[in-house]
Figure 1: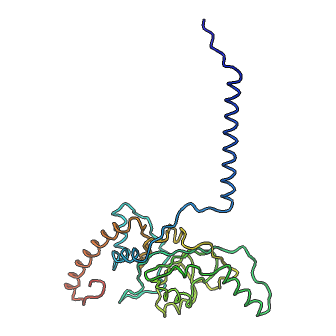
Figure 2: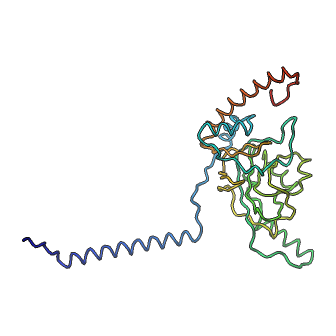
Length: 286
């Protein structure tokens, strides 16, 4: 009977040594990665597009409605993707010229509830200083520099805080920069004035308080969640009386092409019905 050859002890020793060295090296790598991760890491990159690229894409969506674009999303296998919660609605509606509608390119911002204590009892001058420092250092608006003609500002905010991050003053500042509309997952204040100003705003409910003591800016032009859906900087935002729809940039051209076909067919059919009913043509069928 053959007896298996016994390997020398030094071979087994070398194998064990190699295993231990590999385990040690892996531990060093994991520890180094862990140290990096503890400082915070983003895993989704932000793509950057220039104004000309944005304008060419927006031209493809000109005049399209949420319903048309929703059909376009279905046609490219993005059914139920990008449809924000129906509770996010327009603050005001224009049923003649439809000026509450907008289509824009997403610029994103995220505010989160603060863990810092409230101001407490202060003299008026000290309180005003505290408010000013909070606005400038903790809850500022760094996204303003990114706004340009065709931008749609999309804000993920502290949903449970009664805070009016959007108001009648700053929303006009954003409009001056070229912002075509604003969407928030939460609140806004000065709503009567915003209706008068006719700046398109889509929100969940009114919020009364100022930002100091309530929220802090966490990030700008990073992926956010608004109305239950992901919003990436550069995505196409379509908003009208039916709600808000987010079109992933990578599929936007395909979506727009199908949506345009839907809109053209709908207008042609409704024009005939207008004629039969003796209705004068309006902007919705031109």
